[in-house]
Image 1 (cartoon, rainbow, N blue to C red):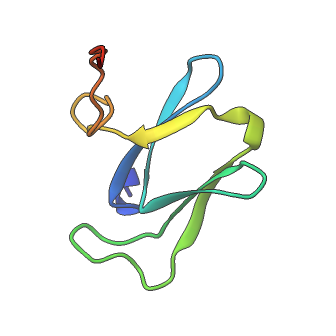
Image 2: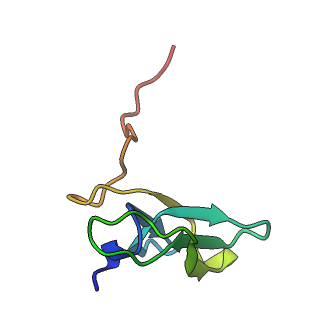
Length: 88
């Protein structure tokens, strides 16, 4: 079973020391106390997501700094412009 059998989206999660991990999940949620939870569920390649989603992982409040949708080719942020144009 490949990790992409558990979610339709590819995410990069970064910690406070600059480390990171990539995960597949249908969605991520930030809880009231700041924990990051990933949801999805097992499906065979090409099948739709299961009717009932499962918690795939949880990361404690102090253990992550940011997350974003990542390119499966480069791992860089999708739909983010990193230019620093000065607006006048």
